[in-house]
Image (cartoon, rainbow, N blue to C red; front, side, top):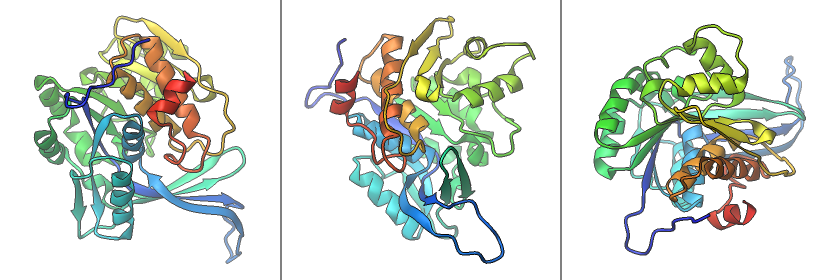
Length: 322
């Protein structure tokens, strides 16, 4: 396997990640709420980088890919925390806008032994729209734009199909991680999916999207991915501890296992998976199985620590674990 590392002074492929920029407040221990003013004692609490876009951008930067992020934060401590933390990780934060009228969003994650609940206050997240993205693209001239958290960004989602056509006309490739639809309607994807180069669902999202976009047939997960890929994008599926697989528009299937790790927290593992795959693409990896392996290993390693970014691998670590 040959991995391309740009020489000093050469043009580094640039990824612009677009979407939600907000901290996660992760709570561990006795987290199931009991009303009636009952005080509960936690075993842990941490404020960390959150938001699918932010975690993916952070993961790409750690993997050596020149990365910028585009989104909106408030003029508050949460917004400054996010900008400072992403900058510290090497992410270009110049395309983060500050809105003085709305607070930065926040997600509260309640971790139990076998599951978790996520409570999100959107704040500035939904304010982003296609005009903001075009402004960032004009400033950066990226090779690729990755969109995250489609259903938390209604203004952007409404104009995304036209925006994707504009990006393709400029020779810019695109990808989307929808994340889960809180309304569970899965509306708005019919015109978007065929215009993407890559779609990154997990297994449950794959099933929901395929039920919404495809004729109702009795399909297994791989067949559902094949049918979605036939619409245009390479579909790269996150399968948790089982690794993942991809299907190209031609119907070629590639699978790869993740790594056995002691899991501390799976928050953001899917975003690290996305980052691993895109890092492989922009490192000159043509073998689809190897791309999926990069993704699966990056997702596995990120689950070793609390929060989505604390244990994301560096490029050297990922290459050493392939």
